[in-house]
Amino acid sequence: MTVLVVVVLAVGLLFSLRILWRQNWALQELRDAARRGQPLLREQNSTGDLPAWPGLTQTINQLITDNTALRHQRTDQLAQLEATLGNLREAVLIVDEANYIHLANRALREIFPAARDLANL
Image 1 (cartoon, rainbow, N blue to C red):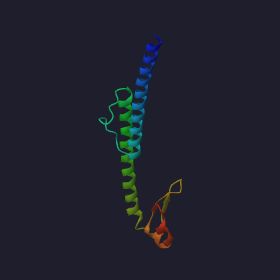
Image 2: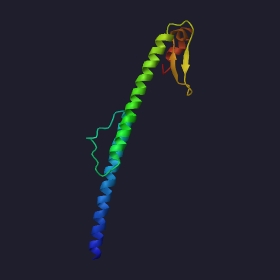
Image 3: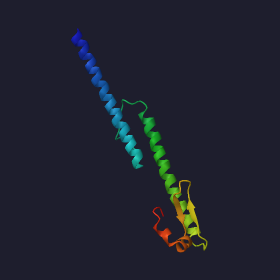
């Protein structure tokens, strides 16, 4: 009888570990998709063991899509701003709160030639 209980507990433990391993693998795939900035395909990860998985995947995919759209919008706006400010004779430098230089127009680079070597221009 004791052997039967041990065998049942061992099988239950192995089944639980398998589910845990699949969940961990699925979460790693989702994390990697978020880091790559590419939506996770549902066919890649059909984890039936995770009831909340479809909602989580859909939410993460939507966040990735929104983030990509915002990056494109920001790039377009900076290009438009650079085109507008690029021909001014006054030097213009746009810096964010983290001191990241987003834009330095031609007049600034002519006044300060060392500004051409800034890493994030």
